[in-house]
Picture 1 (tube, rainbow, N blue to C red):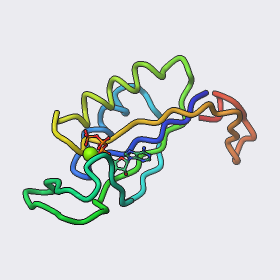
Picture 2: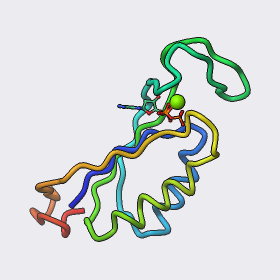
Picture 3: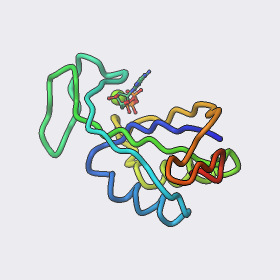
Picture 4: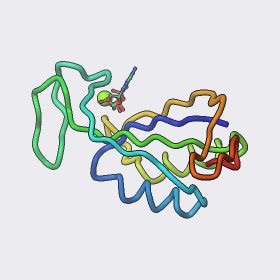
Length: 112
Ligand SMILES: Nc1ncnc2c1ncn2[C@@H]1O[C@H](COP(=O)(O)OP(=O)(O)OP(=O)(O)O)[C@@H](O)[C@H]1O
Ligand SMILES: [Mg+2]
């Protein structure tokens, strides 16, 4: 299994969720976060306004998936979240050792 941590533009959350639904992804965790990348200290456009702040609002999407789905999921997120402009975000992939569905006790991929 893999655990993907995706930092995207807030306005791209719906598109990413729809893309993941289309791939049969059964769950995700979403948080409002703040962050910066390489343009730290410089300006970035957010919702039409230019910001000169260090931290910009982003959305973090966390998804546990079958490792066999990784390439397809990453490609779908890239297509849904990408604009080609700075600040589009990043996808981090971690090895996921275990998962359990609390109600049923299922584990591994069956728990996702
Ligand atoms: N190395 C990193 N570690 C953790 N989070 C990061 C890292 N780089 C970027 N992020 C997160 O991703 C968000 C978006 O980063 P961003 O897309 O601006 O990256 P970038 O490297 O500056 O690329 P670009 O030049 O396309 O803007 C940041 O606001 C931050 O929340
Ligand atoms: Mg950036």
